Length: 369
Image (cartoon, helix red, strand yellow):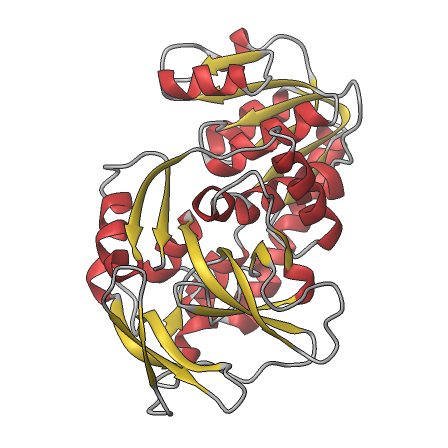
């Protein structure tokens, strides 16, 4: 396994009064750490907790973060099950995890905005191979920002990946502004709930669909003007008027049809369920990626002519400006993602099992002592 190593180790007391094995280099920078590895694709049982995993050397623009909390995203469980295998299989084992909150342990030579000891939060790109389920994670400088001082590490770790995904759709693609009407399909999830709060903060009129009574109360408390339970109501009848932007976090044919029919001409439909990864998994990169691009282009042309709207597949990407605005809103109490349960890092397998079996509908965070 490429991540395993037997470098110099130092025994240190952990937060529970026990013992943890941390590898330290000549300057006191960690060279090995604990991490949860995914050596093959499958169910939660494939995850392995290792005590001695190598910490790679930093590139000039990178930051070594001592993790305190990392959240579990749907992308993590999908990757573990094999989503994106055409990209990730050649580089197994993976360290899963996108979100992180912790302290800066070391910085690369070109890093200017962060200093050692500073509390930070952020998120890795979806294609990162070395994720955040580890004592020490490596992120680029533009993937991190100072942690909101009003939030704990657990609270902060739940926000970046989901909020940046929503930010890219609403701000970069749809370019929402004051007075726009925004529909979020699936507002009960982390991305959808982030999108609601971002749109409200931008001065938009927001409606959302969801499937649970607890989600309705949260959505309305977050500032949405309307929340529709799709399990008991006809969304097309219940949702009044037409919208400037629709963010579809569900992305099935029915929600796509509803979202597109509820858009104004010139509006933007954005789905998080683009087919690039699924087509490359099925047909390989050489065929799958061009095929997915062709399908996206076909849909864009089709809907532009039939409905006069813009159609997009959206993914999270690093955005320093977006992350700093997310930090500002979180600090002001205008952007929060509730955490339903925490697990220690060593119980990542149990946390994934709970998510797979839908025992915990909301956000789950791994705490690191």
